Amino acid sequence: MLVLAFDTATAAVTVALYEWSPGEGVGRRGAAEAVDRRRHTELLTPSIAQVMAEAGAAPGDLSAIVVGVGPGPYTGLRVGLVTARAMGEALKIPVHGVCTLDIIAWASGRETPFAVATDARRKEVYWARYDSKGVRATDPAVGPAADVREDAPDDLPVIGEGAELYADVLGTRGQDPAPLLPSATALAELAVARLSGAVRTTMLPPEPLYLRRPDAKEPGPRKKVTPA
Image 1 (cartoon, rainbow, N blue to C red):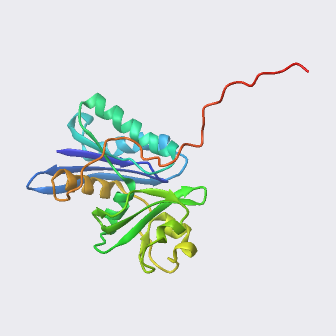
Image 2: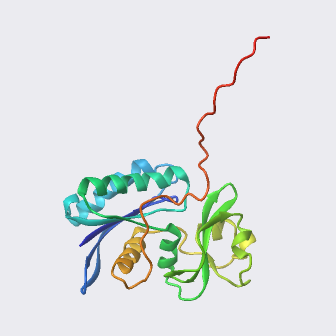
Image 3: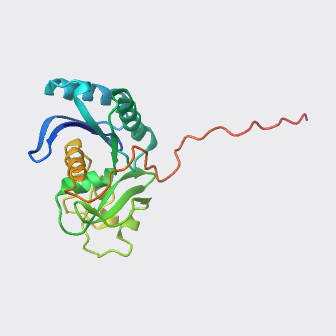
């Protein structure tokens, strides 16, 4: 079973191809990573093609697609979701979603409580708290970095790009906030763990977790002009 995974909800454009054989484990066939906050559209499709070519695989070989659903800024996030849904429809294969914060949590390997915070711009973060790498304790949220600490232990570790950007607010200066961004390798491994039942958390539909309205708005009705 070949699983193609990618995420564009942050500055990272990350793609991975994994092979999963129930009862025989999981193996990575290829991966590509790039960090460019403004070029998700230009980077994603070539990265997918590169990973598939390096693995000697064709689109028809894929069994499933897994995509990060955010939370994240509207423009970057929709690139991955539109691509995933279009590929899934064309290939007639299932498309699964995973919260992007969960991807970072999984990659951390942590087994004790912590929080993940990513850059939401507007001096805010997307965040959630976790009991361990595979168990999220709160729903994803967006707000000032100080919200991450509200009603939480003072020594709760915080990881992700938000922990680096707002180290003074979060009290994380001098601590290791890695991983800062999601990786498709972690996404694929987490997805397989969920699909196989090793982690008892259901997959999400490939729908965006925006948490707030996009900056772009539809124009309102035209104002009437009254003659002077």
